[in-house]
Amino acid sequence: MRVAGLRTRVIAGFAAGALALSASMALVSYQVTRTNLLSGRERSTIRAATFDARVITAGLKTDHPDIVGMLQTLDTGGNRRALVHRDGGWYARGADPGAIAVPAELQRLVTAGEQAIQRVRIDGVPAVVVGLPLTPTTALYEIDYLRELDQTLRVLGWVLTLVAAAVAAAGAGLGWYATRYVLRPLRSVADAAQGITAGDLTARLDPATDPDLERLTTSFNEMVEQLARRIERDRRFAADVSHELRSPLQTLAASASVLHRRRDQLDERTATAAGLVVDEIGRFQSLVDDLLELSRGDQPVQLAPTDMAALAHRVVEARGLPPSIVQARAGLEWTVDRRRIEQVLVNLLDNAVTHGGGPVAVRLVEDRRCGIIEVDDEGPGVRPADRTVIFDRFVRGRSAGARGRDDGTGLGLSLVAQHVGVHGGKVRVLDRPGGGARFRVELPDVR
Image (tube, rainbow, N blue to C red; front, side, top):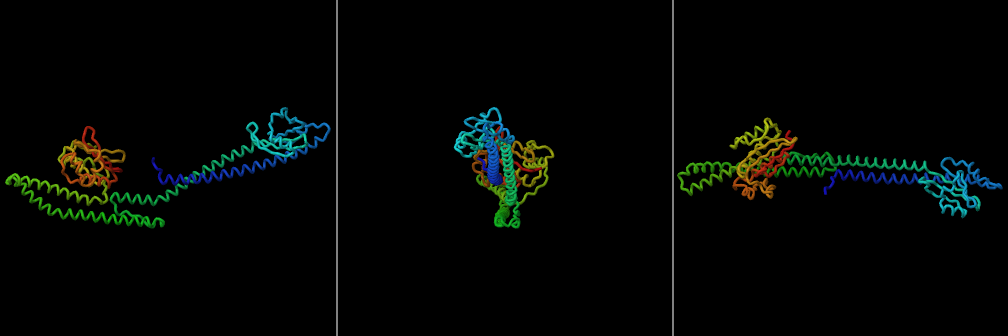
């Protein structure tokens, strides 16, 4: 399962925290407001019912009280309804007082001589029922419908919900801003590391950017300094060794060439030995040249517009290969380090000649802003187990033995990976349709 990124987690945390806080405050505010409004409405209903009870009580003192008439004189407005229960019968303004169900528990309390109040729902409408005992056989019940109050509470609930959602969105926005600010130094570290990967060992972080990250920037810069010094020592060592080997190699090569030219004058065994010496000296010279190239590999790339079709044709012709294997449109121009990409083509073609039975195609195409170089050969291909290690230095054993002769320096494909890597690209080996290997180089942002 894919783990969410740091920015996503921080934003989600801010949003969740803001939502929890705002939802809690909204719930408390709603409950406090609802309780206060309902309590105030109940008190108002009790006061109104008490006043109406005095009116009804005064009317009951006559010999023949007109209960319905007295109820009609009450100012109950549009929300309240008054009922009188006397001697087991119900009286109301309307014709059907029994349609209103007064809770039995409330009736029991009022019959016992207690004032009582209860919240109920009548036909889905919330209401408050107040019961007041008037005489041992008479009681007044008033029903106060809470339509407006219920609608007000609904509106309040929606408003508080929207406020909570807005606060959560604001929290997410604050989290986004905070992560953008907090992650800015990490982006600087990533940019510097990317520059170092591309060969720019002068990339450094500014310790004054953020005092809280001074230790990080100082440690990073010290690490880069040590890395640069070590790389420079290794580069100088390889360059010095290669340079020092060139002089004796040239002497050996000159001597070996004399033996090679006079091999007809030597006996068979000596001529064979001379031929082996010449071959190994040539291989040794190639190894020294590759080491020198590796020693220059950590230098920054020198990007410039390059006619790739012309470059490919020039490399192919220099290797004595047919120009027809190059497949590239005329005028194909990429912004690359010409020297490095030329070395990439040379090494891939040499690898195809040495281990792949010869190259059959060199394709240069574009995919959006990405430049793609493909070199196909007609050899036995590369086993899947070797495809990840074939670009390491001095890897020649299984792959070389499987694909052809066990010669070469073991540095050619390593140089290809290095030159492609400093361009920010990647190289891999695939199976060619119909048999053989396909080396594919992908170079980003060549336009």
